Length: 240
Ligand code: GLP
Image 1 (tube, rainbow, N blue to C red):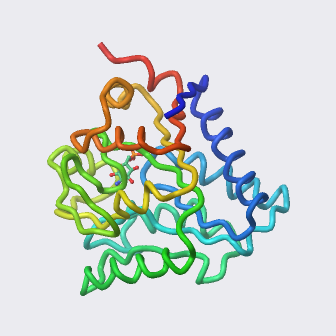
Image 2: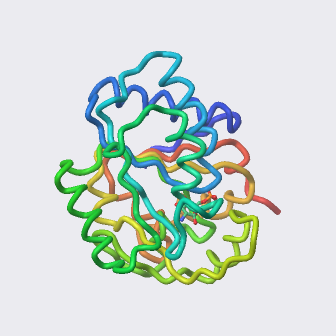
Image 3: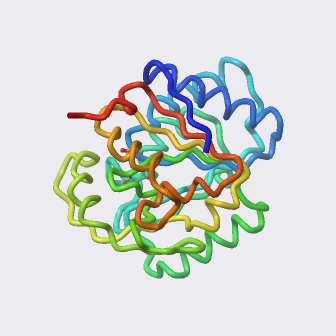
């Protein structure tokens, strides 16, 4: 996994946006996954602005969901679909079929996983993925020591439950996430793992120093042949 440290968050988002735009120009029918959460919000903003200002043809791309909180949908501020919709999708002129997202309130979650798996298979897999990293190293909702393959329902780790209050403006009890699995992540052609800020420095250091193991999900990316770790300076300096 190549490592690249950018001076600040602005530069980090700019480099990642450049790469997404390059991907879309190279393959107009690209299938793209961008994580939810707070880290990529600058990418959502820059990407939507630049796709429009640079008149990039994004009419054939498909955005595929990485994960969602089980029990939440677009009606809850802070859900993954709400975050991506309000910062990215709603700024663009996308057809309905260009957004493939987990429905966190589906009555049959196994069927929901199958639905997403089938769509990804029909699309021929994912071309480009931007991942964030959880405080415990999780990727999507692939929590430590849970080995998934394709889309899966996963029990949230205690660390994730502690941290999740930052996303919501009200108290919400959540126990599970729905996520793409390791196979879908590892079969993606190109991956960027992004992290920003001092709070991520410890898990970034652990990711860099540890061997690939499901104890720290982010380390599994070391087995991918085209994955870059892109972080800002703050995420490199370990807090005392
Ligand atoms: C969240 C999501 C991930 C996200 C990660 C980091 O819980 N499940 O998709 O990448 O944790 O989130 P953040 O960028 O808000 O720190």
